[in-house]
Length: 280
View 1: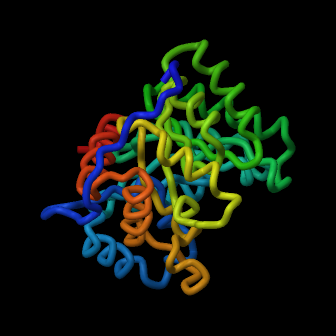
View 2 (view 1 turned 60 degrees about the vertical axis):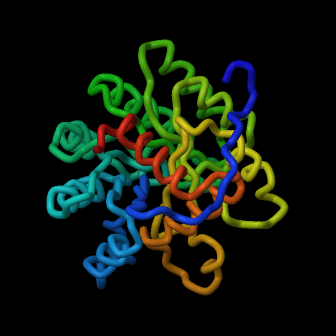
Protein backbone atom coordinates (compact mmCIF):
# COMPACT_ATOMS: atom_id res chain seq x y z
CA UNK A 1 0.00 0.00 0.00
CA UNK A 2 3.00 2.33 0.18
CA UNK A 3 2.47 3.04 -3.53
CA UNK A 4 -1.13 4.01 -2.71
CA UNK A 5 -2.45 2.00 -5.63
CA UNK A 6 -5.71 0.16 -5.18
CA UNK A 7 -5.99 -3.56 -5.68
CA UNK A 8 -7.90 -4.15 -8.91
CA UNK A 9 -11.19 -5.79 -7.92
CA UNK A 10 -12.22 -8.77 -10.01
CA UNK A 11 -15.13 -8.40 -12.36
CA UNK A 12 -18.11 -10.70 -12.19
CA UNK A 13 -21.66 -11.30 -11.12
CA UNK A 14 -22.93 -10.26 -7.70
CA UNK A 15 -24.98 -13.46 -7.46
CA UNK A 16 -24.12 -15.68 -4.51
CA UNK A 17 -22.84 -19.19 -4.96
CA UNK A 18 -24.04 -22.26 -3.01
CA UNK A 19 -22.96 -22.50 0.60
CA UNK A 20 -22.33 -18.77 0.88
CA UNK A 21 -22.03 -17.55 4.45
CA UNK A 22 -21.11 -14.33 6.22
CA UNK A 23 -19.48 -12.93 9.32
CA UNK A 24 -20.97 -9.87 11.00
CA UNK A 25 -17.74 -8.52 12.47
CA UNK A 26 -19.43 -5.94 14.75
CA UNK A 27 -22.87 -6.26 16.31
CA UNK A 28 -24.17 -5.15 19.73
CA UNK A 29 -26.45 -8.06 20.57
CA UNK A 30 -26.39 -7.10 24.25
CA UNK A 31 -28.20 -3.85 23.41
CA UNK A 32 -31.64 -3.35 24.94
CA UNK A 33 -33.04 -3.18 21.40
CA UNK A 34 -32.64 -6.97 21.20
CA UNK A 35 -33.89 -7.84 24.68
CA UNK A 36 -37.35 -8.95 23.59
CA UNK A 37 -36.46 -11.17 20.62
CA UNK A 38 -32.76 -12.03 20.71
CA UNK A 39 -33.35 -15.71 19.87
CA UNK A 40 -35.38 -14.80 16.80
CA UNK A 41 -32.74 -12.25 15.73
CA UNK A 42 -30.00 -14.87 15.89
CA UNK A 43 -32.11 -17.42 14.02
CA UNK A 44 -32.88 -14.86 11.29
CA UNK A 45 -29.16 -14.19 10.96
CA UNK A 46 -28.49 -17.92 10.56
CA UNK A 47 -31.23 -18.19 7.93
CA UNK A 48 -29.61 -15.29 6.03
CA UNK A 49 -26.27 -17.11 6.01
CA UNK A 50 -24.62 -15.19 8.87
CA UNK A 51 -22.73 -17.96 10.65
CA UNK A 52 -20.36 -15.92 12.84
CA UNK A 53 -21.03 -12.74 14.85
CA UNK A 54 -18.55 -10.70 16.89
CA UNK A 55 -20.13 -8.72 19.73
CA UNK A 56 -18.01 -5.90 21.21
CA UNK A 57 -18.58 -4.54 24.69
CA UNK A 58 -18.97 -0.82 25.36
CA UNK A 59 -18.63 -0.82 29.16
CA UNK A 60 -17.67 -3.24 31.92
CA UNK A 61 -21.29 -4.40 32.25
CA UNK A 62 -21.73 -4.64 28.49
CA UNK A 63 -18.49 -6.59 28.18
CA UNK A 64 -19.66 -9.06 30.81
CA UNK A 65 -22.91 -9.46 28.88
CA UNK A 66 -21.28 -10.14 25.51
CA UNK A 67 -18.88 -12.67 27.03
CA UNK A 68 -21.88 -14.49 28.48
CA UNK A 69 -23.63 -14.39 25.10
CA UNK A 70 -20.55 -15.71 23.32
CA UNK A 71 -20.22 -18.56 25.79
CA UNK A 72 -23.92 -19.41 25.38
CA UNK A 73 -24.39 -19.31 21.59
CA UNK A 74 -22.40 -21.23 18.96
CA UNK A 75 -20.97 -18.87 16.37
CA UNK A 76 -20.91 -15.83 18.68
CA UNK A 77 -17.66 -14.26 19.88
CA UNK A 78 -16.94 -11.35 22.20
CA UNK A 79 -14.66 -8.33 22.41
CA UNK A 80 -14.31 -6.45 25.69
CA UNK A 81 -13.73 -2.76 26.22
CA UNK A 82 -15.06 0.64 27.22
CA UNK A 83 -16.40 2.86 24.45
CA UNK A 84 -15.03 6.43 24.42
CA UNK A 85 -18.53 7.77 25.07
CA UNK A 86 -18.81 5.57 28.17
CA UNK A 87 -15.34 6.18 29.57
CA UNK A 88 -16.45 9.24 31.55
CA UNK A 89 -18.42 7.06 33.98
CA UNK A 90 -15.97 4.15 34.20
CA UNK A 91 -14.46 3.38 37.57
CA UNK A 92 -11.02 1.85 38.27
CA UNK A 93 -12.85 -1.37 39.10
CA UNK A 94 -14.46 -1.32 35.63
CA UNK A 95 -11.08 -1.30 33.94
CA UNK A 96 -9.91 -4.16 36.17
CA UNK A 97 -12.93 -6.11 34.95
CA UNK A 98 -12.00 -5.50 31.32
CA UNK A 99 -8.49 -6.80 31.96
CA UNK A 100 -9.91 -9.97 33.51
CA UNK A 101 -12.59 -10.49 30.87
CA UNK A 102 -10.06 -10.13 28.05
CA UNK A 103 -8.58 -13.45 29.17
CA UNK A 104 -11.87 -15.37 29.07
CA UNK A 105 -12.74 -18.05 26.50
CA UNK A 106 -14.52 -16.80 23.34
CA UNK A 107 -13.01 -13.31 23.71
CA UNK A 108 -11.24 -12.57 20.43
CA UNK A 109 -10.46 -8.83 20.68
CA UNK A 110 -10.11 -5.77 22.89
CA UNK A 111 -12.62 -3.00 22.32
CA UNK A 112 -14.65 -1.21 21.34
CA UNK A 113 -12.34 1.71 22.02
CA UNK A 114 -11.34 4.83 20.13
CA UNK A 115 -11.99 8.56 19.94
CA UNK A 116 -15.15 10.60 19.44
CA UNK A 117 -15.39 14.36 18.93
CA UNK A 118 -18.96 14.19 17.62
CA UNK A 119 -20.27 13.74 21.16
CA UNK A 120 -18.75 15.37 24.22
CA UNK A 121 -19.74 12.85 26.89
CA UNK A 122 -16.14 12.12 27.88
CA UNK A 123 -13.36 14.72 28.36
CA UNK A 124 -10.76 14.50 25.61
CA UNK A 125 -7.85 13.57 27.89
CA UNK A 126 -9.90 10.75 29.37
CA UNK A 127 -10.63 9.44 25.90
CA UNK A 128 -6.94 9.46 25.02
CA UNK A 129 -6.05 7.70 28.28
CA UNK A 130 -8.59 4.92 27.74
CA UNK A 131 -7.57 4.45 24.12
CA UNK A 132 -3.96 4.03 25.25
CA UNK A 133 -5.01 1.51 27.92
CA UNK A 134 -6.88 -0.59 25.36
CA UNK A 135 -4.02 -0.49 22.86
CA UNK A 136 -1.51 -1.57 25.50
CA UNK A 137 -3.78 -4.37 26.75
CA UNK A 138 -4.30 -5.65 23.20
CA UNK A 139 -0.56 -5.65 22.57
CA UNK A 140 0.14 -7.36 25.90
CA UNK A 141 -2.37 -10.16 25.17
CA UNK A 142 -1.55 -10.28 21.43
CA UNK A 143 -5.20 -9.63 20.58
CA UNK A 144 -6.58 -7.35 17.87
CA UNK A 145 -8.21 -4.08 18.90
CA UNK A 146 -11.59 -2.82 17.63
CA UNK A 147 -11.53 0.92 16.96
CA UNK A 148 -14.30 3.51 16.91
CA UNK A 149 -13.64 6.91 15.36
CA UNK A 150 -15.91 9.86 14.80
CA UNK A 151 -14.58 13.27 13.75
CA UNK A 152 -11.14 12.38 15.20
CA UNK A 153 -9.28 10.62 12.40
CA UNK A 154 -6.02 12.56 12.72
CA UNK A 155 -5.83 12.08 16.48
CA UNK A 156 -6.64 8.37 16.22
CA UNK A 157 -3.95 7.79 13.61
CA UNK A 158 -1.42 9.64 15.78
CA UNK A 159 -2.23 7.35 18.72
CA UNK A 160 -1.95 4.28 16.47
CA UNK A 161 1.47 5.34 15.20
CA UNK A 162 2.63 5.68 18.82
CA UNK A 163 1.30 2.22 19.62
CA UNK A 164 2.94 0.72 16.53
CA UNK A 165 6.27 2.19 17.64
CA UNK A 166 5.99 0.07 20.82
CA UNK A 167 5.39 -3.19 19.03
CA UNK A 168 3.12 -5.18 16.70
CA UNK A 169 -0.35 -3.70 16.25
CA UNK A 170 -3.39 -5.58 14.94
CA UNK A 171 -6.96 -4.43 14.73
CA UNK A 172 -9.90 -3.14 12.75
CA UNK A 173 -11.27 0.36 12.18
CA UNK A 174 -14.94 -0.50 12.46
CA UNK A 175 -17.84 1.21 10.64
CA UNK A 176 -15.26 3.15 8.66
CA UNK A 177 -16.58 6.58 7.66
CA UNK A 178 -13.40 8.49 6.81
CA UNK A 179 -11.73 9.10 3.45
CA UNK A 180 -9.32 7.21 1.24
CA UNK A 181 -6.18 8.79 2.73
CA UNK A 182 -7.16 7.68 6.24
CA UNK A 183 -7.87 4.17 4.93
CA UNK A 184 -4.44 3.96 3.28
CA UNK A 185 -2.68 5.11 6.45
CA UNK A 186 -4.63 2.66 8.61
CA UNK A 187 -3.81 -0.23 6.28
CA UNK A 188 -0.13 0.72 6.30
CA UNK A 189 -0.26 0.55 10.11
CA UNK A 190 -1.54 -3.02 9.87
CA UNK A 191 -5.27 -2.43 10.38
CA UNK A 192 -8.26 -3.94 8.66
CA UNK A 193 -11.14 -1.74 7.47
CA UNK A 194 -14.74 -2.72 8.17
CA UNK A 195 -17.72 -1.20 6.39
CA UNK A 196 -21.25 -0.98 7.77
CA UNK A 197 -24.60 0.37 6.57
CA UNK A 198 -23.19 3.82 5.86
CA UNK A 199 -21.38 2.31 2.85
CA UNK A 200 -24.80 1.69 1.28
CA UNK A 201 -25.95 5.31 1.51
CA UNK A 202 -26.07 7.23 -1.75
CA UNK A 203 -25.87 10.80 -0.37
CA UNK A 204 -23.16 12.91 -1.95
CA UNK A 205 -21.44 13.37 1.41
CA UNK A 206 -20.66 9.63 1.44
CA UNK A 207 -18.70 9.78 -1.83
CA UNK A 208 -15.28 9.73 -0.05
CA UNK A 209 -16.44 6.66 1.85
CA UNK A 210 -17.47 4.91 -1.36
CA UNK A 211 -14.04 5.68 -2.80
CA UNK A 212 -12.46 3.95 0.19
CA UNK A 213 -14.76 0.94 -0.29
CA UNK A 214 -13.41 0.46 -3.81
CA UNK A 215 -9.74 0.81 -2.88
CA UNK A 216 -9.30 -1.18 0.34
CA UNK A 217 -7.30 -4.32 -0.51
CA UNK A 218 -9.05 -7.67 -0.51
CA UNK A 219 -6.94 -8.92 2.38
CA UNK A 220 -7.92 -6.04 4.69
CA UNK A 221 -11.68 -5.88 4.12
CA UNK A 222 -14.39 -6.74 6.66
CA UNK A 223 -18.16 -6.27 6.70
CA UNK A 224 -20.46 -5.53 9.63
CA UNK A 225 -23.85 -4.16 10.67
CA UNK A 226 -23.01 -2.27 13.89
CA UNK A 227 -26.50 -3.39 14.93
CA UNK A 228 -28.78 -2.01 16.18
CA UNK A 229 -27.38 1.13 14.48
CA UNK A 230 -26.65 2.11 10.86
CA UNK A 231 -29.52 0.31 9.15
CA UNK A 232 -28.49 -0.15 5.50
CA UNK A 233 -30.37 0.92 2.41
CA UNK A 234 -32.97 0.02 1.27
CA UNK A 235 -34.31 -0.49 4.82
CA UNK A 236 -32.99 2.84 6.13
CA UNK A 237 -35.90 5.04 7.15
CA UNK A 238 -38.31 2.12 6.96
CA UNK A 239 -36.98 -0.02 9.80
CA UNK A 240 -35.40 1.65 12.80
CA UNK A 241 -33.50 -1.31 14.23
CA UNK A 242 -30.65 -2.89 12.34
CA UNK A 243 -29.81 -6.56 12.92
CA UNK A 244 -27.09 -9.02 11.84
CA UNK A 245 -29.15 -10.62 9.05
CA UNK A 246 -28.81 -7.33 7.17
CA UNK A 247 -25.05 -7.68 6.82
CA UNK A 248 -25.93 -9.32 3.50
CA UNK A 249 -27.32 -5.98 2.26
CA UNK A 250 -24.03 -4.28 3.14
CA UNK A 251 -22.08 -7.04 1.40
CA UNK A 252 -24.19 -6.74 -1.74
CA UNK A 253 -23.44 -3.02 -1.93
CA UNK A 254 -19.72 -3.56 -1.39
CA UNK A 255 -19.66 -6.21 -4.10
CA UNK A 256 -21.40 -3.83 -6.50
CA UNK A 257 -19.04 -0.93 -5.76
CA UNK A 258 -15.94 -3.13 -5.99
CA UNK A 259 -17.23 -4.96 -9.10
CA UNK A 260 -16.65 -8.31 -7.43
CA UNK A 261 -18.79 -11.45 -7.28
CA UNK A 262 -20.65 -11.76 -4.03
CA UNK A 263 -19.19 -15.19 -3.30
CA UNK A 264 -15.69 -13.73 -3.71
CA UNK A 265 -16.53 -11.09 -1.10
CA UNK A 266 -17.83 -13.78 1.25
CA UNK A 267 -14.66 -15.82 0.82
CA UNK A 268 -12.23 -12.96 1.44
CA UNK A 269 -14.10 -11.60 4.48
CA UNK A 270 -14.23 -15.09 5.99
CA UNK A 271 -10.49 -15.45 5.46
CA UNK A 272 -9.82 -12.00 6.93
CA UNK A 273 -11.89 -12.71 10.04
CA UNK A 274 -9.96 -15.94 10.53
CA UNK A 275 -6.62 -14.18 10.09
CA UNK A 276 -7.44 -11.25 12.36
CA UNK A 277 -9.57 -12.82 15.10
CA UNK A 278 -8.55 -16.49 14.85
CA UNK A 279 -12.14 -17.53 14.13
CA UNK A 280 -12.37 -20.56 11.83
